[in-house]
Amino acid sequence: MRNLSSDGALLLLSEMIALPAAFDLEVPHRQRSYTAHVRWRARGRVGVAFETQPEAEIVPLDMARRLKNCEQDNARLKTRIRQLTEAG
Image 1 (cartoon, rainbow, N blue to C red):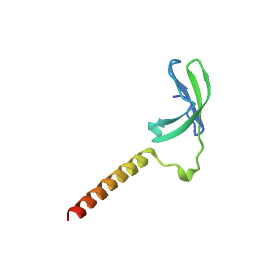
Image 2 (cartoon, rainbow, N blue to C red):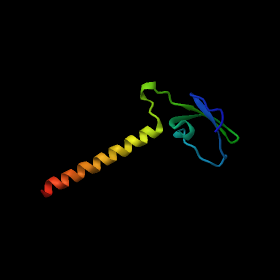
Image 3 (cartoon, rainbow, N blue to C red):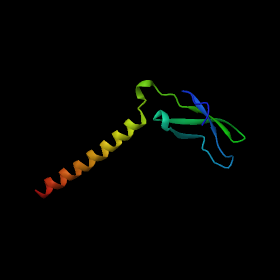
Image 4 (cartoon, one colour):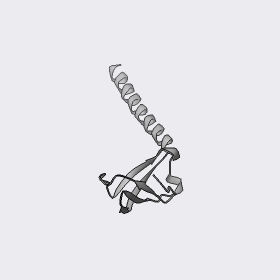
């Protein structure tokens, strides 16, 4: 990845890699994931633009992962409570 900005990035890829017109791009050092849209391709270089989102909706990637884990834990606990209540 080159020329990373808040609006997009330049990706260096093998010309053999198939890339969809839109995809999610994870940027670990920013702890973020972006919805990217291909704007141009040329000799192993791909210019992508990031879908703009209001600042209030942007959630750091680590926080989104923790939230997903908490939701899964919550669902498991609800299932366990239901099992214990029915056995009771």
